[in-house]
Image (cartoon, rainbow, N blue to C red; front, top):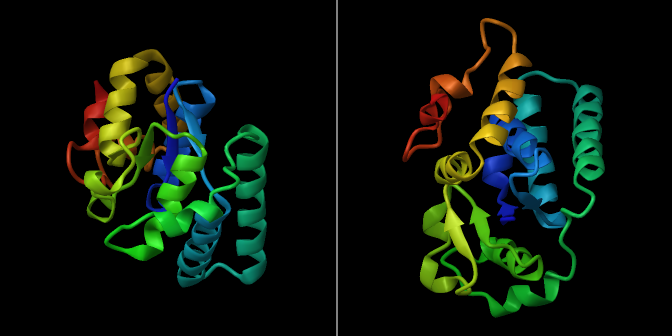
Length: 184
């Protein structure tokens, strides 16, 4: 089974996060993240939700539920012991070193990120690839079509009819090979 470290940027969009986590819960891959990735996710979502007018109480409740569900559903996803590896990693953006450190410590096969330029292949350990969200989802679809389609349908059903299947329509795609290909 593939082990994938999920960068913050692919966890921020709620539909992408829901699809990634639903596919993982179906057993198509094993997700990983670190305390720093979760802290970045917390800061980013707090800012986005506040801009949308959510109260501090609503934001706290939402994030508490989200992180509790992630912890319960994926109890082994939190990578530990990555901190001492940070100083050994050299990237164009030093603030991203924690991502590679967590991938190494968690023995990830791939870092799923839409910031590919920040993770040049030459700067990564040979055992760790980097892949866009779209590329990762399409590879999972090729490897585990039944699990992926079932997971995407479960997410699409959770949206109101006027929003249902937004991911399937290719909206809010992160570029590259478009997620609308998941419609197959």
